[in-house]
Image (cartoon, helix red, strand yellow):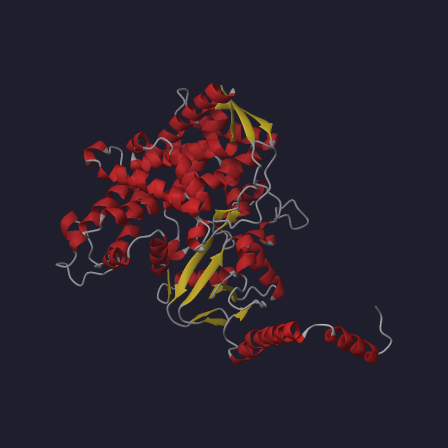
Length: 527
């Protein structure tokens, strides 16, 4: 309808409103006025009063804020905010339920946050994760209590550990991880076991596939069974699988829905059921005498002994072990899945990597770990590209006091997210052969052409600062070994499905998920 003057428009509106009963009209107008006043206050007046604080992405509904769109796709919310703020890449904020989350995107700001270990802390985030897993507050207090003297240091005294800095057990746990995964002796032990079990579990899965489905198996199942199965045996020993042969399936079912823990999702019956099943298997395992649990890694052994030393009860110890399982397994198998999905749908890349990794396999089928580390640039590039293209992780910090980052000041007690994904799709990742930005194309060659790209400030798939993943080297070796063994010992044929699309309506934890019902079905033949 077109009005020839303002009076006609006004008269039409008046007559239209007259038809609405006052019992409906007045509440609707009251709500509309409230929402308008809220929006003006929150996103116009308040920013004017606090010009140093990061600006907030506007929304209409108080309390809920950006929660629903963030659950669907946190990355899209962040990218929408970046566009709204005209790509300044300054820190900004979004609202999830009743909490304001501060987002840092610029690499320089992220580096500043990583370096600041005084007011931007990570241990509080770890404590929150432990509470989410159900560990009691009493145990948490004991684990994070710093001894005031050597006499009070129960852990160091009972286990004869060196702790000159009088660190809490929570802080010592990170040292245990570094000893296992960064220290030469600990790393070598973990790598040797892991590569052995990848080979063994892969052979077992191929055998099962031939017995049950003429050699056919979905790529998701193969990757999950081999990498989670191998990691669990390498860190916990084989006894756990005698207790619960379906441990990988049970843990995977929990992991798929574990995002519901972070968001305190009310409809999570299946997630809680699978979490309880994982913990029941771990409970049976820790009740066994230690001599029956052969093959336990240093980190698992130290976690158990130190927790028992501070008096941690069985229920909490089981949950701590579950958290350990989660940390060990949460991301590598997902990155490998996407790497292999692209590899088996790209014959040229497959031929290149098969040729490259051939020298890593000896005549008896054993792997040369050093060769894998130093002489497989395309295999490394494939894994890097999977990390870049499909990562959905963030570093998280808590600002204890008001903290300046770049040109903005984060308020005290702010939760700060540093998402990796937005920086993975900047023009800095364009390949040298492309005249336009091709960062939205999956192309491992970008890491082969530009050797410095994997060290770029824009590429932080393993976080940084105090949360810099100590298992990053082992994760890369795990992926390279799986690829080398799979393409070197077996012939792989794609039976059905190209590269799956990503799921856009389910929260992604760590890595993007494949769309429901999409997978790559392969047939494996032993060479």
